[in-house]
Amino acid sequence: MASSDILDLDATAQLQALAAGEVSGVELLQACVARHQRLKSQLNAVVAKDVEAATARALEIDQQRARGEMLGPLAGLPMTVKDTFDVEGLPASSGLAQFLGREVDDAEVVANARAAGAVIWGKTNVPVLAGDFQTYNRLYGTTNNPWDLERTPGGSSGGAAAALATGITALEIGSDIGGSLRTPASFCGVFSHKPTWGRISQRGHIPPAPGVFEDRDLNVIGPMARSARDLRLLFPIIEGEAPGLATATLKGLRIGLWTEDPAFIVDAEVRAVVEAFAERLEEAGAVVQPMVPVDSRALLDSYATLLAAILRDDMPAKTLSSMAWGRPAARVAKAFGAGPLSAASMVLRYTATDAELARADSARQGLAHQLAGGFEQVDVILAPVNPVTAFPHDHRAFARRKLTCSGGQQIPGLTMLQWISLASALGLPATAIPAGLTNTGLPVGAQLIGPRGADERTLAIAQAMEDELGPLFVAPPPVGL
Image 1: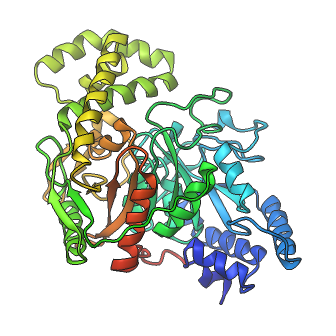
Image 2: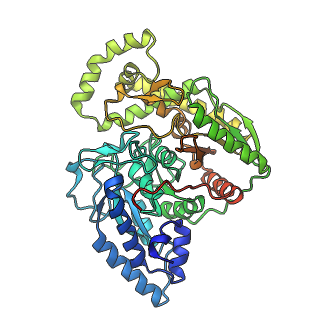
Image 3: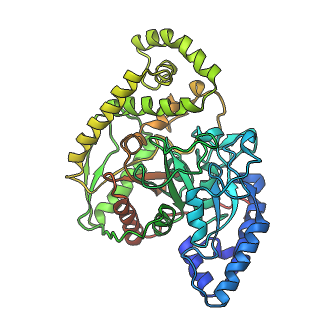
């Protein structure tokens, strides 16, 4: 098999080829770097690399394999890593030049992957401080979606998703506080897993600022891949635990279908793809029932307030001061009907008092209690990831951005927070899978949301869907391959 062809296989198959001697680690690495070079001008997915160090590591593993030594589960597999993680020799920029030039050790998840034999060779692009639904910054520029170069691959793990979709890498490590694992997976047609909050260490992730260690509320670290089995391969490795033993089958699986919600918006084409996927699951023996998991208005209000309180820690003092001055006007605007994701509402959230934050957290706990009863009726919730498919690049201020639905309806850009809020606010596992393509040929992702701590369940169900329905990943049209 040509080393270029092997890049179209998932990580599990690439590892099998390495073990069988069909390709060497050095050859596989060279193929990855060559594909990156061919696609760099179109995609701009990988923005920093250390090929020399990676080649030396790949050669070392090849020699160990030739001597018959015991090797890790990722031995010789080339990998890229989202540029919010510190990698020895490649400090995380998080889109800012000021964070470069630091002496760093591997982030904990990177160290775990490297210890398993992964060959880390590059960093994938992100928005500034991982704080956007798109991927662009002044340091490295804009990353494009391989399905349509005029559109975003999503954010903040956008470079990772674009690299995965095009075979530049077979595995990635991303992070998610506002859909940053799930949105890019949906927009680029790949897989990701947002773990239960707290299961995977955030040490070495930027933000917060370098030198600050905290497992931030809402934020999680998780795997990205081109198959469900690859998610299951990487998840326990970066967690540092033994693999879970959960199994699943579609026959008799109880699925709560969440595509209609009085408080949330979803484009008709996105909804049609997710519901068509649900019909395929029914045909395979699953029991699908419509549901609205919780009071979605209360959910979004709590989540947006808690999220803003975290993000404000990274904001310049001048910006926060101007928001504080604008708080009285924002209160008036909200009183006269400004929506929950309006600029006025967000000003109030960014300047929330301790009492307001306490109320948001209390509401979150109440919603978690409410949802616990729902999971007695279903094994997993199936829902859209986003209200729309990948949208054209739009680098205006957040308050000026609009999303356009297929029927021409315009909705606020922050509507992107709606469908991802349940898993994020309540710390639940959510596995993002490709559900299909719209009539216009853009990927649509769905998320499988499970109870807190049930990561192995959602991952096993995702693999059952892939095993019983056939491969879910579809490669994008060629972009210079």
